[in-house]
View 1 (cartoon, rainbow, N blue to C red):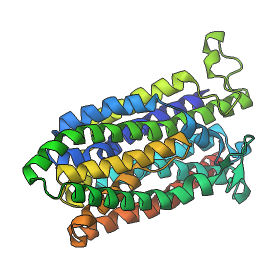
View 2: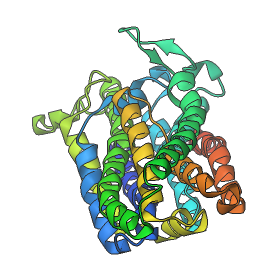
View 3: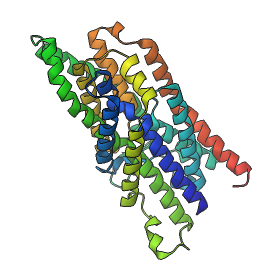
View 4: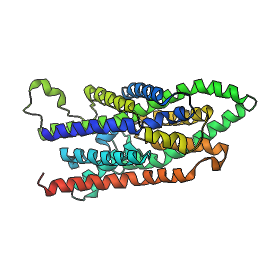
Length: 355
């Protein structure tokens, strides 16, 4: 039971860090275009993160049951996965790099499961189908979207911006600024909603996985009857108390802000006006919301970053500061391997210490 409480604490710490680490995903453009102050934008994002986090559980079900074999998961596995993801998130936040909290958690889970199985790679579900015939596994749910979602963000952002340029070609810059200064409030809110709907569910999934593991192992058998809500016998049963707790924790983390990453996302990659911010946010939000509905845990960081790049490229390719982009891409590439190694190493260390 003590280990479960540590897992729950680590999960909530991860969710809180995810909130302030990924705040910039939703609000960097609305801040950089000066439509809202940083403080106003953060509190708006916190509110819509909360609403989005309460909007579904499809992504949570993918995390809890569609990536690694249940037999390879113990309470220590879940704890190691969370610890690896937390370490990487704090490191990249300190550097001001918008890395993916989603991929940090998934990488940590895969590495920890491998460590628990003592290097047996068959515990990773690469590609399979569930009882309803829907695709599950790392390839369709993580790896493929890891490449396609940023590509869609870049192309979609560029296309939407190009269409807006055609429609608005005879409109004065002042009127464009006025229109999209208001419109960007809605696009930023939509982006924050999408972030909550996708990212908050990842922690819901990992807590449900811990509850299922604890139930199967009999960890909760001797607890008083009023704690019966801890018993989870089906992966797809995401307890409502888990949904609400994760939603509130992410909103609190978002309210804390992530100023380092906001500077990178909103100021260093490309200079934006409100119309550019609207195009980037709308594109990213549509992609993220669509992924959430089909249970795909995409990286909001990757999608909005790529959308900003696509929008910036319509001005001219040199408008995008590719040196900054290169640092961001390296963080993308390294996230899953490093968190996987961290998760593996933490589990193996626990085994060596007799746990």
